Length: 239
Image (cartoon, rainbow, N blue to C red; front, side, top):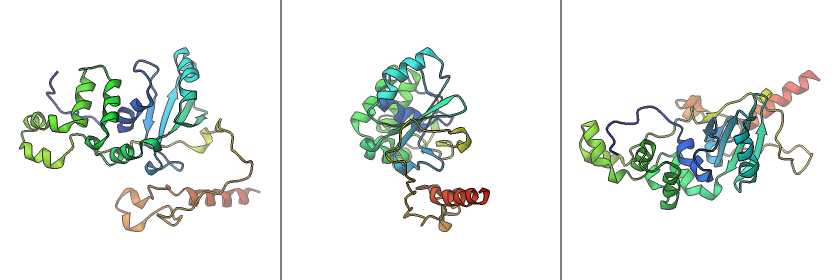
């Protein structure tokens, strides 16, 4: 199969590059969406893959959950929501180097083993397989993409990648706390565990010098500590 046009629409990089690394067979119940981060909970640097499943009564999903999802070696927690969804958090710290390359848009720098696992997830020589191959091995496709774009091949070689970088707004899960009744992972202690300080923004939640990027929001903590302090003040005011 030959690529005749660019993959124009944005697609979740977390879904097509990272979800396959969980090892689930294609054709099993697919997640509703996949994310790199979770507002107020996990920043991209935390290396946590957020996977959202819906249609929970589906027998295929129930089988997947009981046989694979709930027993996965990378699973950190499962959080049910009041929207008839379940949110799975997987710890990808064992893929630290690949994760850092991926969130930076350096898809060609992924390890060979990771690349092969990703490609094996897709039906061989299908449209998705060919596009993913071009993103993972751009050196084999620079000439073809240069023909499509009508630009010098050297220009693409200089850029080095054939896939756009992650869009952090689209790769961020946002859900109101109201819809999160509890996590099914029991805490080790019943005592309140304070949120750790953020050494990047000094717990301010924003970094003024980066105000031109997402209004300066701190991508490491998303202002978690500051939001918790605000909630504490609000709770005291209601007592």
